[in-house]
Image (cartoon, rainbow over all chains, first blue to last red):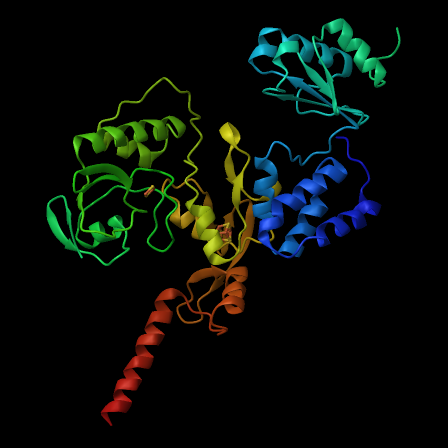
Length: 162
Length: 249
Ligand code: SF4
Ligand code: FES
């Protein structure tokens, strides 16, 4: 599995965590900040948060597995989000997912070996008018077809030039 | 304060839960996620009853409903029975092979349904009582993990937990016997971890894990005697005896 080196980066986590008062109610906020910084919640951080906020690791782990926005496994450099809401589903979002699998060899919830891409699905991106919709990081792409999909992935270095 | 439960007049303190009052008066209400030692969670909904307050009639969970007025309670009206049947049907779809739920199903005459496909190896109804127990012990080794259809109770990362002391409280309160705890000659295994058991200094019976004893010494009385529950009681009784003897002198 893809696992970036974070050892020397832990002092950033320490800074983030220590910004917060030692109270249980900041658990989610800290987890979100850590997620934002590392794009996942490293094991070491869970322990650090637990010690700082005096919240049991089991409770933090429970939260981290509950919220979709938090991830325990490292996300890739580029996060591809394919909408699989009703409108997009009807307009064959599954074809896009299959196409991504062909290109990058990942299914939803997985990350490529080189750590470049992660794939996830969501149930609506709020842009049904331009279905099927997908996002790469913060950028939206509408009316995506398998062909345009390849173009998009190429821009991010995902598909070799043929 | 006076309340009527199934027509029987019962005395209740302000704020007492219906279930507790019913129990004290020998009226049976079925429960799953309830333990007298822990505060209620109200997740299984099996303990529902009908409460009549003046002209209002409502269905409440008796384990969590505090009595604040003089009310009438009915524990097994047709409506309640019907609702309980649905609850039991759903629970048994989740744990088709669980003996306890099977017995409930028989008691209430609920037929197994093929509408949902349950896992024959599943025994947990996710009521959360074990988590409550572990919390009460102060160890917090287990919690709910994931959500939706993948939700389960587990230790962080599904690994052997450093926080677990092998006390077995979680297994003890579990209403469906879903938590495996295995004990053989001096060893206890729970949540994937094997603990060494200690012997009672008096009767020589295995009674607790080393971690459990350390935990209670740290947290509770600070006394270092290694006695099982029975010998502890005996010791207490003996000390009373001498007190009385002293008084008689
Ligand atoms: S055996 Fe472990 S998990 Fe269960 S209640 Fe005791 S400390 Fe918690
Ligand atoms: S015992 Fe009341 S909801 Fe479970």
